[in-house]
Image (cartoon, rainbow, N blue to C red; front, side, top):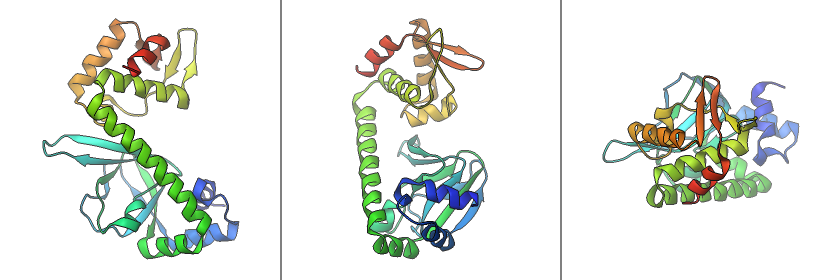
Length: 228
């Protein structure tokens, strides 16, 4: 089993398919390597394919009228992106860019739609995945419009604790998956504001930055900030 086949077979939407069906899906598409910073598709570009991350990470983002970048989501291995527009539009509504050297599987629109029509279970699971993504986007819009940067950053740290936080004597050790410039865009702010918020968290004893990562030293205070 090659890495493409293995990735597809482990995706939630394809779990009910047989190995031969997975092989058929693999034959529908192709894999392309993208260098870090390379654009996969642009906002307004004709939507011709749906994509799956095989290796690496991809950011999907929009650029506002003021030139500020807002990251909508970051996709990693086994994540599909660009599929929603296959059903509902003619062009991509945002930009997609490789955050690091990545391998991306792409499936032409016509083959993708044929697959969905032929596999009702895949279609149902895809609808579920889309509903979850819509909830995430709704929560993100609420964060950007109603919550302070400190609350957004606290919420992000709590998410990271749930995903990969390592308990230690001092609290929880986190290895941030993005640099502060990228994190600022993800949280809908600017680097200077984020740096001030980091400094404020350190002054209050909520976090401590070390060479090997970041330590959340006051979980209770972090939770209170996230709810503010």
